[in-house]
Image (cartoon, rainbow, N blue to C red; front, side, top):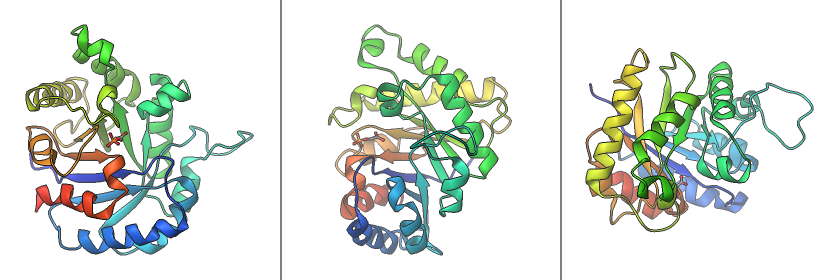
Length: 246
Ligand code: PGA
């Protein structure tokens, strides 16, 4: 099944209003890369501004997290509906930094993914094993458990991002063979757990994707794009990675 690649940028806690200049460059560059979809997830403070700027372009704007409830007394949190209202069309849920610094469980991530669907946002559901889990030969088992717990039942319209925790922000990446093994495993799991269009769900790789390693990582079987942190902050690097899909 042909899946359109998705090149997504996760800006994390980086970016001020002036960063719109980078988005403008990304929007311009994306227009000459018709074979991929694009998503930039800036901090929440920039979602409305970026959505307005990218309107009508090939670049969608997303949030980095949402709360499961649609509204209420949850100081500091943001509902999926609020992201949608601000112009977002997607949201990352279950990023390893949220799991680690905010104690998010698989059940919490699943509730967030359900909230995304309720609000009409595409959920980018993140999974990935720790270094200790990989060293213990438990990488597939750990990711399988996260997938089962984090994806809503019957979810068909979401994106899965495989991000080995030890590869995020470290400059270290798995081998292509390890990526192929993990993405193949995730694909089988999506199909086996009854996700109707498991073959159509895009599985992104994330963790230290750079222009220099993009081809090796992103052309592996069952890799349908990238979730890019550090290198997405510079339009030139982000577009150089996306050029793999030229
Ligand atoms: P990185 O981050 O590209 O800086 O490793 C990836 C991510 O956390 O999504």
